[in-house]
Image (tube, rainbow, N blue to C red; front, top):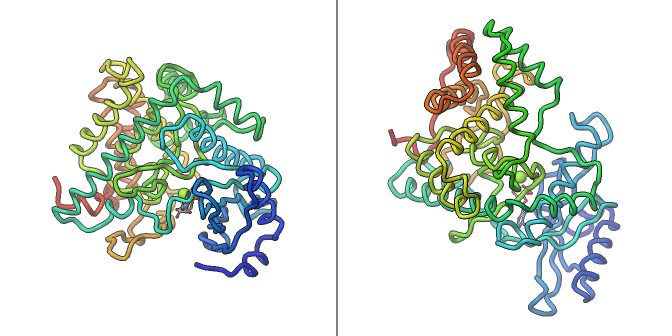
Length: 416
Ligand SMILES: Nc1ncnc2c1ncn2[C@@H]1O[C@H](COP(=O)(O)OP(=O)(O)O)[C@@H](O)[C@H]1O
Ligand SMILES: [Mg+2]
């Protein structure tokens, strides 16, 4: 959508634009005025995305920029508190500034940000947005399968490189975060009340309740919240549409859930079938093994313990348990026991075989439980949780007789 400058000004005070121009002028030490402003986000979205164009003066100054502004809702229009919205904004900013500082081309370059107006200005990665959505959701053909595999390889390599490059740099990240929003919420953590709710839910659905099970759920909470050699900067929402994949160059965008934490919270995304994403379907198991091994090779370059099978398997199993427990929260929040819930889908290409109508939530829970159980049986970790999840799967299959697991992403649909 292209809005004229006056339309943008109506929706968003000229003050934001003036401030953007001032911050960029200070940054580049040259007067920067915008000649054209295009709104990329749909009206009413929680983030406003603008493309700002200026007259190029010298090669060092880009001709276009992306402005991302978080619209803080103080009313009842959102489930999030103002503090949570500010935290999300601060994570986006801190993640991009941090990654820009350490280098490595993991994300668009961060230029400037405004705490007052809640926006950041970052490198423009291009007018079209090629991502993983295209390659994963195109109908199966030998060629499309190949392209989907290549895109996934670029994705896991980038993920492994970003994790490896950021290991041991928590202090720098904390320093940046403190400057932006000192009381920021840390993202990947469970509160005691969340833990007790999940325990009750598992008990009510399966009858499973024991100190051993409680202890294992607490172990997952501790695993998530404790730093170790796998503590890296993670994306936290590393979905098919949160990447820019241009001519084999993979970069990540949208760091609202980025934070330091265990690398496997991101690395489990394939095995858990993109747990936080609208674009979620199953991968064939050979693809998961192949991609995890490519990811692991990158991680090993900086984190020595990644070579140790026992350590590696434990981290992966716990991360999958984390996403499974998050899945149970969703089950509870959207009342999946009572009724199916179909979330909204994002934009897809004209040749996409994605079917928004079939993007239901119950199949996700079933497929993720199956994936977790299969992994945990192999690694032997979290045995009581595994038994409880086996019982949960059986129970849900009875409660939802007409539901089966997720289908494969369209690009893999002819693959066994
Ligand atoms: N650096 C960028 N360069 C070009 N387009 C971008 C850039 N960042 C975001 N966009 C566009 O804006 C969309 C939304 O950005 P994103 O950061 O994912 O926000 P949201 O949190 O609302 O999902 C992206 O899908 C992409 O099309
Ligand atoms: Mg996004």
